[in-house]
Amino acid sequence: MIRQSYPNFNAGNTIYFKGGEVFETSLYVNSLNKGTKKNPIVITSFGKAKAIIKSDDRTGILVHNSQYLKIEKMRFIGSGRKNGNTKDGVCLSNCKHVSVSEMEIEGYQKSGLDIFCSSHVNAENIYAHDNGYAGIQVYGTYGNKDAASDILIRHCFAENNPGDPTNLENHSGNGIVAGRCKNVTIEYCSATNNGWDMPRKGNGPVGIWAYEVDSVLIQYCISYKNKTSKGSQDGGGFDFDGGVTNSTIQYCLSYENEGAGYSLFQYKGASLWYNNVVRYCISENDGNVSNGMGGLFVWNSSEDPEELKDCYFYNNTIYNERGGAMCFESKSQNKNFFYYNNIFIGKDDLNKGADISGTFIGNDWFSLTGTGFNMKGARNFNQWTHSSGKELLNGKVVGLNLHPKFRNPGKTTLTDPTKLSEYDAYQLIENSPLRHKGLNPTKEFKLNTTNKDFNGDTVTEDMIGACK
Image 1: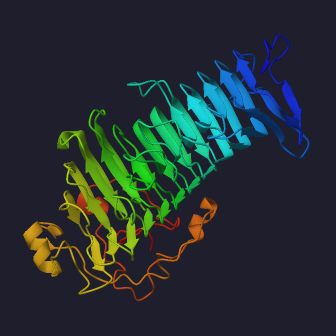
Image 2 (image 1 turned 30 degrees about the vertical axis):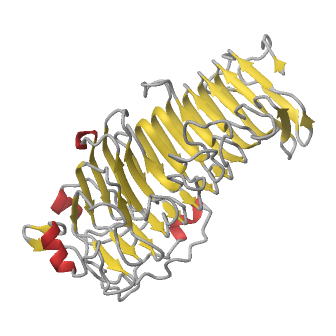
Image 3 (image 1 turned 180 degrees about the vertical axis):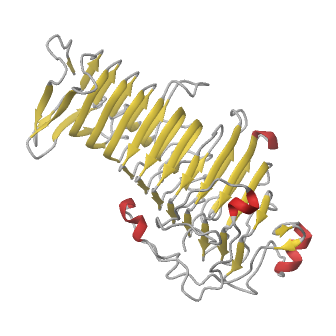
């Protein structure tokens, strides 16, 4: 391991590793604080290629108690999550004002990029793959959302992080996960093929998700074909889990995940979950393997509705030609959950779990087989609205039971988040019966909505679903 006391490193200095060469070592940076906002200290590669730090069973680089530092254009390789490595790849611990970019991280048993109790950290263009616990993890100390804050994760790709073979107590195999932190933005990121080798049965991994956080924004991301171990739970696309507050998922695409596209969870013992939003998102053919079926999954093991409350789920499109549109766990008690202007499409039975709960107004429901509507055996939409109390506004039925006529549903292959604005599979064709059938969310529900839809087009007052 290279250790350095940095007596001669000052603001604006650059430490170079020759690009393309392999350095069989581990790096340790401690208390490097001489950089400034305008002139940070830089660790990078010289030349066009990335320098390779081959750390075998050790951490690739551990940066502790340092600030105003940039690490860029490097590749870190561990010996493998099952071949001796028991560490993280790139670890930032108790740091401030650090940026990491243009890095590839692989072969670590824990996380590829691990950001612990740090603030004002930017991570961009990170390719984290073939690690154990997660591709990228952000977290702070237990019971404290303030120790890790102001984090930006942008243009990152978490792929094939299968699971930590030593973790037999909890989930592993996540793509990007944030916990016990606040003010975190995850945008233009992708997660795929994670979680398939978690070494246990039970709660499982998710592509991109958060728990015990405040003010997290997940946007313009794609989470697809993520998995869980055989017989286990989860394996979904996106998740706001226990203790999430004041957070938003928007403009995201989820498809062909083994678990649900979008999960709203509260586990027993978590802090309160409240004031969260999911809007202008799409789920395609999610949740057909694990217990989290369909595009939307609601679960509350605390069994107290006061612990899972105040959520707006609006202008989303859920499409599942293989199974249900949603699943409410038998323990899914919630309070003040509102579902407006969504499109819920399923193969037959639209709900695969317990009876749905919450306020549903102005949504479209359609089953692709049978009579065109099936809600746990109820086949007549109008009768169901009155018997359930759903889709009624001032005593009038405002929900819809219409085939939406999307442009090209069920065939998604998009993997580049920067091209989400060009994605047109769930736009409504010109003669769609759903055009101009949405309710005005500001007028009817007093919502302060965004002015852009999934594709970046201007939102109209009467649109339904994620796209025009």
